[in-house]
Length: 165
Image (cartoon, rainbow, N blue to C red):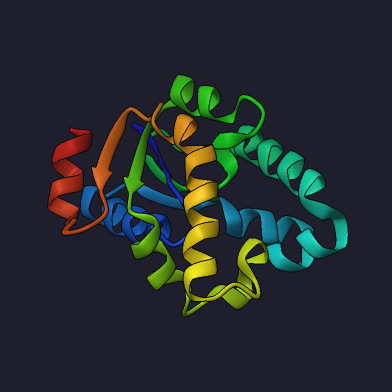
């Protein structure tokens, strides 16, 4: 099975996809790491140098051109499902799992590490929550197309394994 984790930045896609892969004995792939290795810079650096449009095109190419093992859990970027036909492609080529959290919870998580997140640099407190609420509302129509939707609060690897069974 190929399983693609999706959701807003800070929801725990990388952490939970790695844990689930270990639990199931599957391989783990972080598409952000593949992208950074391919371009030789961080996502933030690439974003700044080339802009969001170029980044989204590259991100989509990497999604579709990566050679996935048969049993794999993949962590994707937060915006990846919302551009081009990426969500449709992931659902056609595996299962998708959306980790759903509220804007307030996401803001609390992101407030600690936002220097590496180009879209939220310089945002704090209520401004960060408001930005996330607007972005999440835009992205929800894509995220809601996921094969599985899980509440990111009180999650465990056992719950995830049961959901994707």
